[in-house]
Image (cartoon, rainbow, N blue to C red; front, side, top):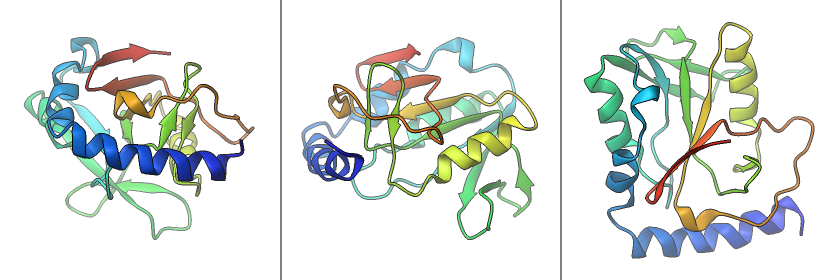
Length: 164
């Protein structure tokens, strides 16, 4: 199965998961490990689209530790994150939405490669882990990984957290 087929299949599954697990975002946030929540930093996240799990409850944990939230600005030629004042910032950690993931940390995104490019750009400046935020049911057996794909460093779901 190719990535386009995976995307179609998992999008339908994710819609069903969102309906059957309305508290998933809050549950996922409860599993965020303290080791990630060092005092202050910049966390990159996005407003959920469609049936994506809401990062809001997780971001609340970061904000309690005085982290600044930065949002993607997809209109730029190169992917950037912007703070609430409109300034370009480099995140210390990114919460990435996804359509699917596998046991190797391969992330299936929407298909544009925005997060892969954003993580590479951030890592030119500093260590920037990418943590996927998903429903546990979005797990796939295997996702073909291409050279441009940046694997997840961790995964946060309504059933727990894991490092890859």
